[in-house]
Length: 99
Image 1 (tube, rainbow, N blue to C red):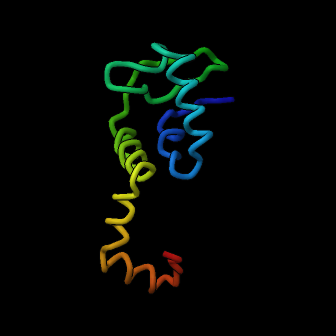
Image 2: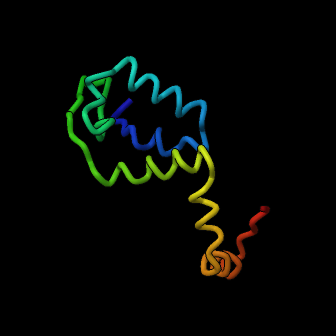
């Protein structure tokens, strides 16, 4: 099993909504206070080794907020993709945007 970072599950919501929500529900409802504190989920844990350090890593919070909003509305993705510099860069790199 190894070490798990809740940030990975939360940040994957736009790509794997069912699995991400299942993981989040397990983290919150089954692991509760072992993994959740005043500022949200702690940085990492290991159920296999009964290891639950109650530490936050600030850099983990940014991707979570951005990806939840992208799942909800797509706003940040659409804003990013509307930048001419991004569009030009993708064209130069030969990326094909189907939208």
